[in-house]
Length: 269
Ligand SMILES: [Fe+2]
Ligand SMILES: [Fe+2]
Image (cartoon, rainbow, N blue to C red; front, top):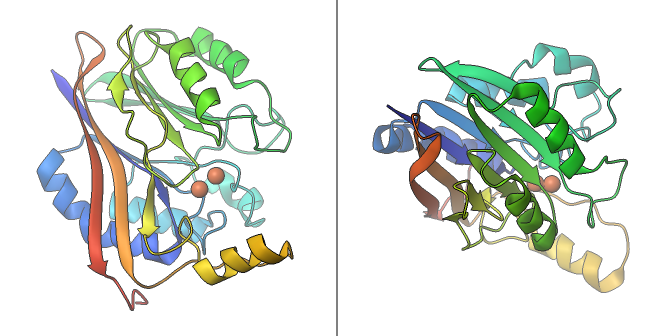
């Protein structure tokens, strides 16, 4: 028996949400996913995720939404997160934070656990060791199912080290956060799938989904600048498709998704 999983990279603002709305149907008929996971940390105007955006992504067909360093950018989420049962925040954030860091679902009767972790290199904030957090997770959840990890991090080396650390214990490690898809998707020596970064769903002619002019000005002047989601130009839709062989608990087939779209100018409605 096989289980098909679609994982989509960081969804950037309304542009990313509309790309999702307009393309998920096509991906569904192409890949027949049993489970769809997406990183939604930038879903609401590029920063954080509100309950409204959470509900919208769920209504498009996303089953589980992972996040990262931007999880609390929209402070109202703190009171709403308990009403977002399939929303994850990094598990290795302080334990007394609201929300959950992993979730177990049964898909076709198979136990699938989705774990959200965040790296510590160039990330800032109060973050526990993701390696120790993984040990804690796997000793709680056990090895009798398939584990999928969103490792949200900046440094390639930290993600690569984590992939090698958990190889053979999990189904897949999918990196997020940089918004740029990497070309190192592969099965690691002990059987886990790994990619350093899945990429994003958002505006391509931008600086990682945000308006270029503002990003450039910030780099040149060093002055504070409020980033804004780019809403025009070409779009990029990034993800990974994974087909698991349930008996072997390993990925039997995978395909990186990197779809470019022409001018999506006017993604307003
Ligand atoms: Fe992001
Ligand atoms: Fe991030």
